[in-house]
Image: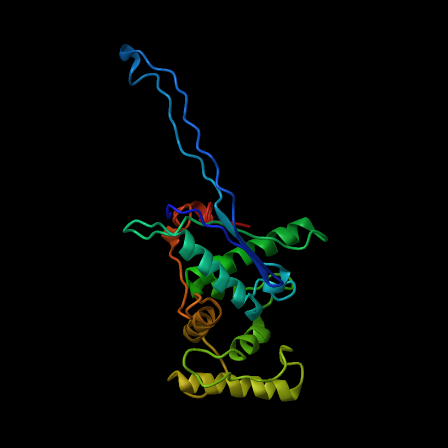
Length: 252
């Protein structure tokens, strides 16, 4: 981390990004060990994990009762990217401070249901940050309770400007295809996107197509302040992707 203290307190309706106060590091007081006991009795000292910054993504960052990340979160991700860039190591490695994702759901209702939903939200956020669309596809199918991405997710994604397209493929309401008009508009949007990406016309999206569509959406809503894609790697997280079930990196 850079030598100069970094202070950020960025509060907005779509999320909070902030640094934490610096802590004084006190010397460690240890007792010496007699030479004859070396290798048998010893004190192990390990630095504590200290939170130096955070981002809070509110409920509006997700579709209601869903783990699908809303495009309204785009500004929060840009501000998070700014925070991470400010806090990255000043040495040659330019490493980001290690991250961990903690999820949330409504405090009311069934605890088991909310726990599962919050876990799915944590995975969705982790998958976005490391651009692993396969995680999103696992959330897409099968769904869980009310967390059914389905047509609404495609409408939402295609309503954003993706890659170098002149504009969105879908401009209708995000209703999941409740009417004949929006069903047709959604099919037309999917077909237009498929054709523009070299998949040919058609109204369905197989896994290969979904993975590409998800990645394009991730890039569209997660950028740095200069408009470049902001992306982390598993090594940028506390457990570096090695924990069982992403333990340490993702807290559901």
